[in-house]
Image (cartoon, rainbow, N blue to C red; front, side):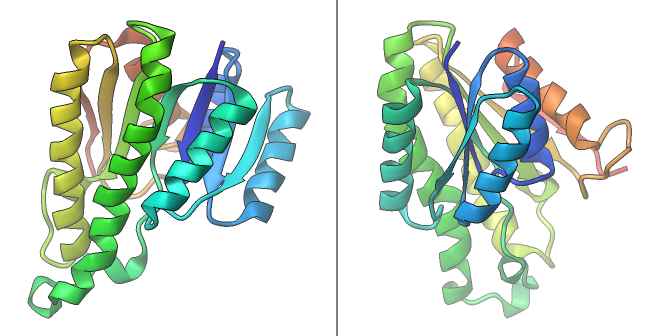
Length: 221
């Protein structure tokens, strides 16, 4: 088995995905902005018998993403699954009439430049692994499909990311590389049968393993 790289790995969904893929034999690359946090999570997972390693990258810096994913592949081997799921910053979510061009720079860097850089870096390795192996997973909030006027930055940037993901799905599907998107309406809620991190991780595993759909959506209700 090869590696899953989780960009935006944290103690909630990222950790749950690491456990779900880890029990299937994947080595896990945990990628976030703070080395101490990913190292602590990696140590926790290692204690559970999951091979996990922490790496640092800034998703708003394409060169940082490229360098880190190159380091992951050099250290752990080819990346079979890429998950792009960092949490957006609160200042991305401004009302539409208060949103200026400058306010959109961060969301676009975060949701467009970051994933484009990540995909370009992992594609050669996925192609090396052969057809029906590689998977690219995008995780977005509900504003990716239903824009909200009080969360303008994420509504615009997530919509762009959703369009990019769908175009990738069409193009890379011809090569046997799966591209899928999980839309989570509202908050992730521990203990909720639909929105608990482990339930969401199971959906992501199914998108990878079944390879039968582009999008799975969890409603906000």
